[in-house]
Length: 503
Image (tube, rainbow, N blue to C red; front, side):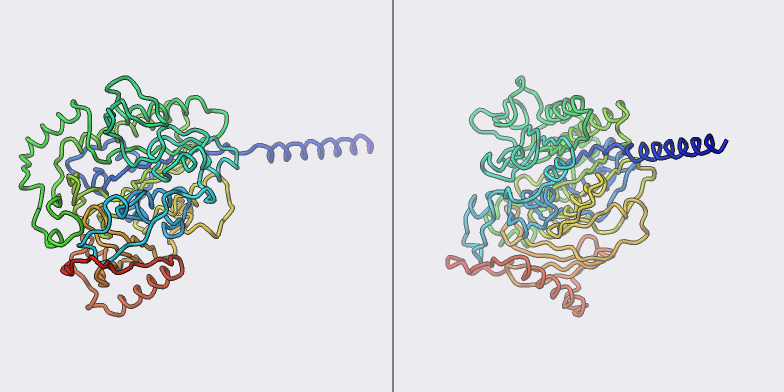
């Protein structure tokens, strides 16, 4: 009996060890990650964020079943710097890409209205940078990039050389092409990383088709997909049937051009470039732009429907964000960002505050979070959800997973912006800092400061600079110290400046 008992104990021990080993061997499946980037989509362009003219039921539904950040920011008021920040988790000053590539300095040149000669920007995202795709590829992920890249002038710096197994549509251009017989958003595209479709094929639908093809073909390994729509970048083009919907809506609402625009703002008189081109949209009502927003929403809906149909939605991390604010002051002034001030190319909220939605895997409870967050936070957040606990000191962003999973409080931290360039939309070179409810803007053209309490004044209408001098001094010191630590280029006097200092 003693021998039998010893054998029984030994067998039980072996079985226990085997069961424990099997438990350890069984790993939770890695979540898929779909990172959706819109182009020039304003904060107020989504119904969930306040639009009453555009229609976005699919994105609204995503936001209502996820975490919607009300204070989500892009890292620059123009595209390339923000996109580099998305890919690396770094502020633009730390990637060297501080303007769209190649930038207004190259595209337009220094004008007599410019008091300063602005610094150069990098023309590509360096291969030495670690992208989200490279980090996840090292963890066994298949990686795919679809759509707008705009982070390198030559193919050496395009997605296939930055960690992506697939690159469909990503190259140097910042928008669809209209020269040499190309038809912008409709095929032929003239895109070296996207074969032309049948004549009249619509680019957003084509990119979604490509995304669905990759989702269907890659089921054995976890997938990271960066789906970067060219929508809603100008030149505006949409399907005629969709345009007709919003023409009728505009007529029903009796929207007129007099209601839509203001062409007499003080800044227009002295803004850099040709002031005759400036007009500020103060009411949403462009049918073609509305149809493009609808196309974005329709195609995001197609992706979500596929995930739900295949049972992969629950185990997918979805991030939806825009690269900068909506275009409201130039180049057709496509949209209004009100109640936010200004738009793309400006350091006011309309230029940098954007729709910002995250749906974690196995997400149970919809939430609205007012904590200020930023594009640099996306990289470390994705890493946290893919069980990558490595924390690189080179990353400027913060892991948002604790906030997404119900942490009561997030540590208060400053968010920074530095855009030492004149924009095509009338904005001066500028910097900014947000800490808590307060935001300080430094106009580098005039060396002036503006302080706003965003909780009380989201439209930045009341400058508190002289009313709260201690807060101004505090934020000014923090901002200048941060720039001094991270950026060593400066503005130089323009010898051909016309002396106009009324900006």
